[in-house]
Amino acid sequence: MPAAYYDFKATPEERSFGEQMVHIAASLFERFSQISGIAPVKSAVPKTITKEFPIEWLNQSFDYVIQVLPKLTEDQLSKTRFKVDFEGRPGPEINGRDMIMNIFVHVAHHRAQCEVYLLLKGITPPEYTFSDAYSSRSVRAGSMRIARSEGCQQARRATPPTIRKAATSVSGSCGLTP
Ligand code: NI
Image (tube, rainbow, N blue to C red; front, side, top):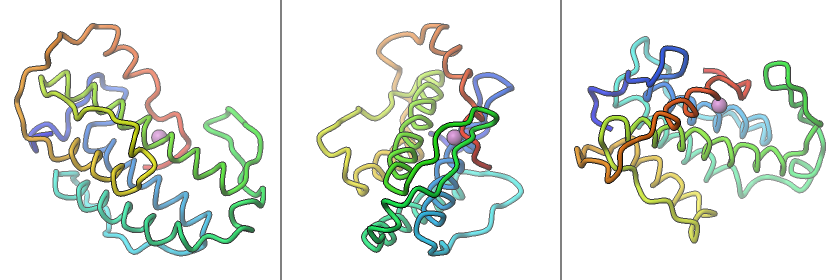
């Protein structure tokens, strides 16, 4: 995404593109520190989100997860100790393994939103692939491609209004800040 569009949002209610990228990184820092008990080393959040900071935070957050993941103990993975209540929608208490799955889906959820942002700006998002979806390095590479995409290629098809509507209906629903 070009730097000029980091404050772009399809509707006033949702996060900007830059805020979405920061939110992905923040969720990884928050949840993996809860699971592991290992505090992340991360840069402070600036008052204004420009292109450089989300890329820095995404790199730091994925590096943090790559560092922490192999150190998790069986107890940390299997003990049920996370209360899930996303803005008044309580779910069952879950263990560390399920929390990892939750955050894996959470990253995909916000990346999918950001693909719509790219389409609305006439930029073709990276292709989705599944074969290497379980490689944390590959997931990071995908987020980096979204964050860095400088292309102005026209999307091959027009973005239907329904996609714009759907993209705005889930913002702020995961109980994480920022
Ligand atoms: Ni979220």
